[in-house]
Length: 289
Length: 291
Image 1 (cartoon, rainbow over the protein chains, first blue to last red):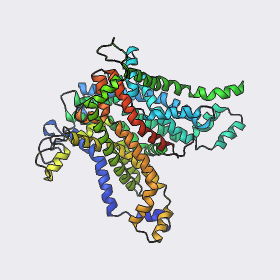
Image 2: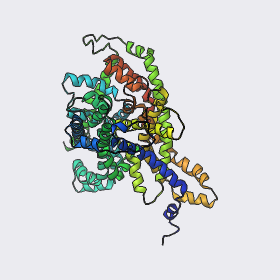
Image 3: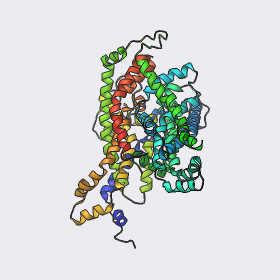
């Protein structure tokens, strides 16, 4: 028997028809677009966008998926190379970005030194600088030094644009770790770096995961930056490949829909499985604590 | 010696960040400014004469700039309103605890995790001008007789872009509002109940005022998203002239017409406009925060 004075008890008991209706609306509007794209992806081309009253295909087909995943067609090759390129860019971004963000966040959150405010605001202000302000000269600099269409340099540009947010997330978190822990370690002879590795890092894996996930999602979703800096077949990410299915070629909507759904599978799975970390990260990023 | 190394240690630790930001952000921003003062067309690479503010004047005089600025402002207003309303609505749904709450949360953040370009592509199937989902639905309900061409009329297209972008940015607003809702002590509601306050009254005088600062954060972040819309417009209408905002205009000037001087001037004008919002954004992030 539940305690009636427990606020949870009252909360649970209050689910009425209004809430059910609102939830149904929320679920339809959120999941609807994915479902419709899925229906498109299993609809044969001749049935698509015709004036028929039915919403579901009469003869559903899986040919778009088999062609993309198993086939030898150029669509399949382009999709897989796009997925591979995205993955590569994400990995390089994480490998460079997370260590730099961590060490920067630690320094700004824990150490005292003259000029800290300059570093802090200098980094944060770049969050609101439009991407064109940097990308126009970067395009020229990259093209004169033959750095265009190189995953490593593309990823470094990603890091420079994600760094403020991830540093922000982490330093807010580091600031919540009790100073006494660090002071005790110092008494035991730990140096600044020792404290960082022995006290701060082991206590902050949740925020490291959140920051890494957010960085992964942002890097995976990039379109504008690679469109300008890495649009060759060897480097263009899956976001560009899918959009080209729609704009450049004779359009096969089924293929486009199937390709789009495959491209969002990694972020969607991340959102499903790591929702706690993502939600915590989103909350940390917006407010302190 | 030890004291000295302790003193410079912070700067050494900040070096990687500093180098990266100087090389890939600060230096390029300065270069963009110098471009904006020059004649700089990649079609004529050898002619890079200093022209002062001529590029700025030419941007401000062009019809395209004002047209695209109108579009940006429309999108800004529409996205902010839609995101805030939907975000708060979703937050209210998520704040209730029940068996499916975890699943609801996962579903709610799904749109936020989407690549914006794919978001646009998926919604294009829904607003497809011929017999896409919305047209089929409206025809079936008898609300229209012939399919509506959603994506080639300026205001219809912009409204669709706003809906699609709000769909992607609402989850963040929802999560932030949810944090706000959860921070309200339950005793407040109970006390109000004892004093005879109805649920609407409680909502109006307890929930709204206490969640308000959180809604503010969601709104500010939505406005940054709205100004930076690019992918969704490309996915829904290509680089067509009808629905272009200032960013598309900037892209076309710079990378299609290869006029880097004018493109850079446009960038600086856009930066000036967004600086106002930027101050709000930093302030909302920085409430009560001490590094």
